[in-house]
Length: 103
Image (tube, rainbow, N blue to C red; front, side, top):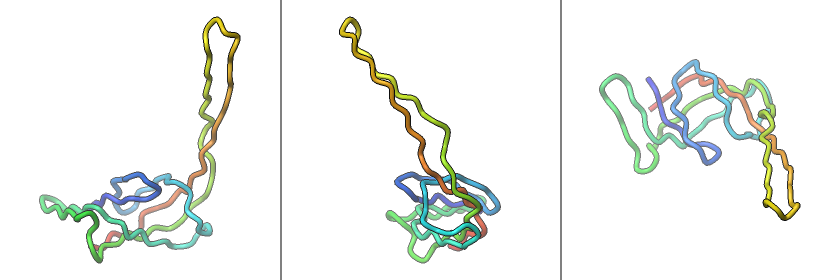
């Protein structure tokens, strides 16, 4: 069984037992969270699609850790104008493990 969930402005295809990194969620490490924005649930040939979400469907996950992604380097330059700008960004994330999908 798999599901497509929406969290942090992004969509993820998840199955039970998977580990994924999502946008930072304010939850303690080791705690259980419930993701209720389930867009689609599929099992074998049967697929259930929401409009836009499936009412009553939830995905239960446990928080494994918090961290920061690798640095993304931004470099802007205008030729012949002696203009250069260096910038970096590290995005925060929360690593979660999908425990169960209930439709």
